[in-house]
Length: 296
Ligand code: SF4
Ligand code: SF4
Image (tube, rainbow, N blue to C red):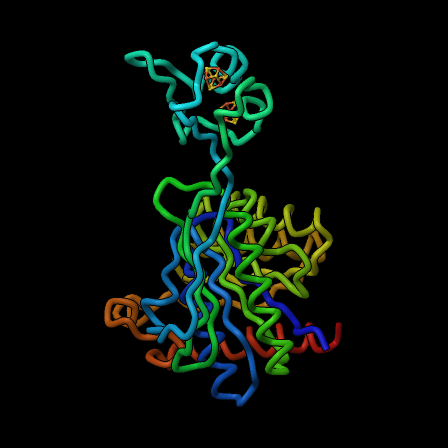
């Protein structure tokens, strides 16, 4: 049976998404439920800091292909440079060069070169790994600095998490999604059973939360809202609740702001294990999510 996939996202970074996902892992582990953790925040992966994974398998991730010129074959006809719409090809000291950052991988120059001097070379843009952690198996990844294709790497992380869950008959996958609403977020929520959007009670975070909700709604993935850092601004919290009510979006609960959570993160501890003040609220939130996905 396909594992139920629960994705935690937020409209912007810093709302406590990883704090909540790692606490979810702790809670499921305490409840004796089987799950795979997938860290899909591949541009800024940080779940490993809290869960200290021990890598069992590591693979390179191949991204787009980039054109390369074999100068020994080149006849300096200039056709490729004139055709490239991305200005990736230049000539310096009588040698044609391709800027791998500018090259879009469109292959036009490879096709057009009359002497087959251009080949497309796949680029290693990151790594993904399967690890053991104190709470269970984790799939995680890291994109090389400046590399693109994070959406594809997110898809790979989720794909590997599903393969693992099928092989080991694990019923749940929890995904720490990327922040924002871009391509990696769309990849992270694609095919998910449920998306929990983490909000915090600041003006900009509410706006970002609304955009994240709209993204989940657009892709017709069932979703709900978790209010993190509650107690910092009652007026904004009321606004989030009213938004949820008006749109008929389940309000999954709130997690009070507590200095203990900050101290726990500094000590690389999971909030739900270190702070009894927030553990109870988080437990209610996670129970609701499991109730929804088990009933779906
Ligand atoms: S099209 Fe081929 S032969 Fe012509 S300049 Fe480019 S690489 Fe050289
Ligand atoms: S593959 Fe496309 S983008 Fe890259 S250098 Fe060739 S023509 Fe330009």
